[in-house]
Length: 527
Image 1: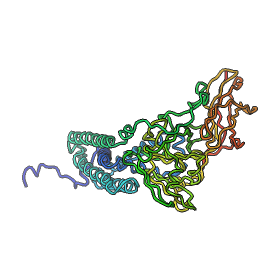
Image 2: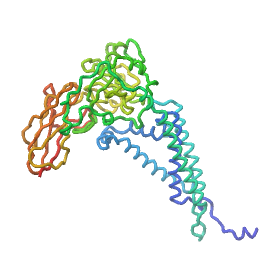
Image 3: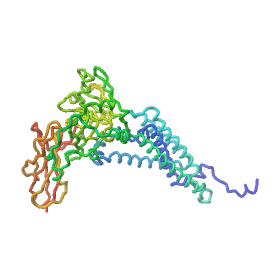
Image 4: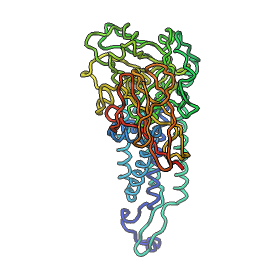
């Protein structure tokens, strides 16, 4: 035995001798997760951004979320519901990655298993996307390989604790090597993620939309009267600017479909199957219609109602060209991202209603987030049965043969928009002066029309308001009046009566399964 061997301390077995420091282990798991997601995002940039495992899992989570929870998210977070979902996913994944790292302090096996499970989950989510092909599985595969490789590398160089008999602790692997390796992973992950986003952005539909230019209808909508709104008194403008038009959908990322790549397949219970290209629609004489749209997720007093001049062609004309067969009940419409809706055939063929295949809003091509290149607009019905965005397929069929996205989740098959009204000015909890207070708002009963709107203070008598000029039966109507508010805290209520004579009920009901009901009210404090 050599002198060196005699001087060396006896070391315990390796399984007991070393383990990763706690924070180094957690950081190893988190960095591996970041690298895996970034690699998947980079590859998805070349294939289609929805192939990104992170987004694919998010879309899957949306599909699996209970209806009540989705409705709560839309009601609570509005247009930020998707950001909240993605942020929540990120927190859960970071926590899981950190835990996987901590469980791997002695051996990389637990963390490797977790990464593989994450990779398989991403692969399954991608495989379920109807807008992707099998090539898209390259993205989760890249995530899995990069995640495992980075985890094993960092696990090998991470600082360790050596436990020796009576010797306490001392650092094993250099902290400097680990910090440099971690910094390299951070920079590499950032570059991959940014690269994927830039590549995806370069392939988006913005340039295609811009190349279309201004859309000019052959038949314009009647001019909007000057007294169609009371914007100076606190109501919204009659026409909603495109940037302010409400958006509620299930798409985590806005589908990017170029006009030159778009086709619409019309098939099913028809005499002849037809495929339309974008130019086929644009080159027809376009019509312009002023329509108010409402989301079924709009709670009492909510903002998910907007009005636009839509441009397109009559949906009834397209159906006539295909020849709808007797017994057909619904148009089973599919978006490019796989979302589906069921529109009643009777409503689509009703020329008095004016259902459209729309390609423009307010003189412009549809904004990307509102369905470019084409969407459906069926006045008088909530959007989940009437307004498929990014539509690429219409199958004429029966209700029994096909169940659309929201019907599978318990929402109603028929979805006529309910008669509702809202107070816009003043907003709730406003401080006002004692005496006469101006109150203004909007009411809607699409395809029926508003006859009158009334308000009352506390439990006092109902008073009829001044209505704006009616534009058509498919649009909202503004109103205003003055009420006497005595000192103290008071509630002001509003209710609308439509042209059938129906006055909206005071019975409060939630948005599920066919739209909210109840009187909107606001609280004022007068002094």
